Image (cartoon, rainbow, N blue to C red):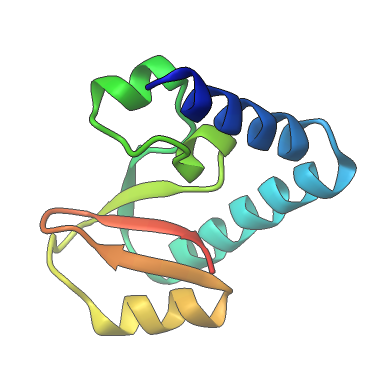
Length: 107
């Protein structure tokens, strides 16, 4: 990650994590994930990340994981589930299937 990318991520992080509105977004996101969990069996494999961990797992610079606004989950049946994606959408989430897991973040 170059300095420009780092600075952009840092400003985004500070904006979210130090403002009441930003913290509210994180809390609402967590609540939406818990609501989704009430209907579906899944395990969380990644939620918040440090910049170092994000680089280690080849995460994209500026990833919502850095802001605690992204979750990677594996459904117990380990397959793509269109109903899961629809229910996530109803909760204001975007569920993106990435071959072996779902990446979930706010719309």
